[in-house]
Amino acid sequence: MKRIAIVLILSVLAVSLKAQYNAVRIETQGIGNPIILLPGFTCPSTVWDSTIVNIKGNYRYIKVTYAGFDGVPAVEMPWYPKLTADIAKYITDNRLTNVTIIGHSMGGNLAIDLAASLGDRITKLVLVDAIPCMRELMMPGVPANALQYDSPYNNQMLQMPAEGFKQMAGGMASNMTSRTDKVGLLTDWILA
Image: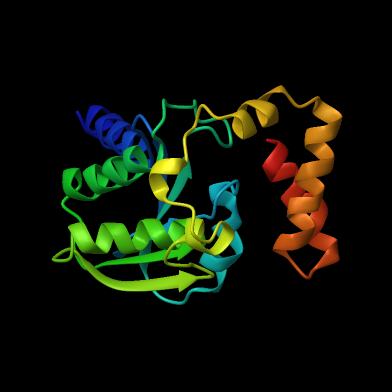
């Protein structure tokens, strides 16, 4: 009987350690108040590992990986609302309260959207390099309805030869950090 109880408990824990939603992969570790860690675009959830090591206290760390990255199958466009919906569903399904969200770049935008829709559950936001409207910063004056997934620019990127894409990824990575020793890692994440 004791052995059956232990197997059942371990089975429940294994299921709660990795949960798969359609647009995100959720991995948890630790116990305590929840901290949801949202990476930036192209970053795997492992980007938060050194942060977790340096946070003092007892917390349940919830690392999120987005569809299309780090082995998580892609989902149909529009992609961003699906991420938001799946993370919100995870929070409500697991009855999380007193939630802190740490979001980097696009993850910061997700954090703001989640706090706006689940304000009674979210108590703190930590935003790292998040901007309120990436479109306006990168393409001033271009209206949101002018951006389409099926566009000549996106189609050109999808048809780009592997070597050209790798060069473009290296250029993007170089613009994302002043740490030249991290450019290769960022490039690898973009390529993955």
